[in-house]
Image (tube, rainbow over all chains, first blue to last red; front, top):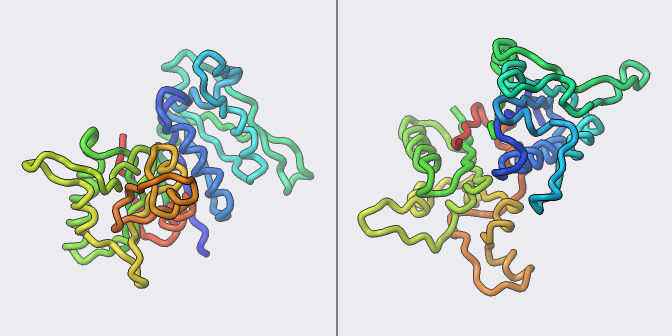
Length: 134
Length: 133
């Protein structure tokens, strides 16, 4: 099967709607298809990878830990909109330390998260074959 | 061109399914192929055969059914995500039986399948067009 560049655009917060968790379900299934996968977090989507999420008070499953598994599925290109972070008073330090092991570099642990401007993100998006928006 | 469509919203509350339908109809009329329509999130509700709008309104479910999007084997290519469907009370005959539930509500022009079908549609099609919020 052909390899294409798939990008998943995450635009909604983790809870409040089902978009975030159902996007992550697609990403995990897609991992089995050995495509070139990247994720983008824009608008309220940046809240999906905030460190220290706690759902005890709302009776929902805390799925944020699943993002730590992405590195094991060779999904290690997570782009975060710098403008979306700034608009919400957030910085890189507020995000989960999501990493992967680089097999081409003696399995060194590297960060999967890259903060980019919307202009850069727009270029990355135009380079994709398929953009799925959630 | 070979198109696939993803629909993320339910009928009537949101225009996504109507817009996607208009798009699909126009694409077919222009000689393009619709490889697959994939219903995800609340979009799975577009497949309920119990949908009964007032007489003076469009029937979103039947509109899709009448487009008759099928593959070479004659199977419907209106595909409903199984995980999203089951958690929203959308069952076909086989899933109803498997879960010991009487009755089923998936329209026969649609079929239930996994998320892999969405990824496959992205790989096989020239364009995957997403309709939703």
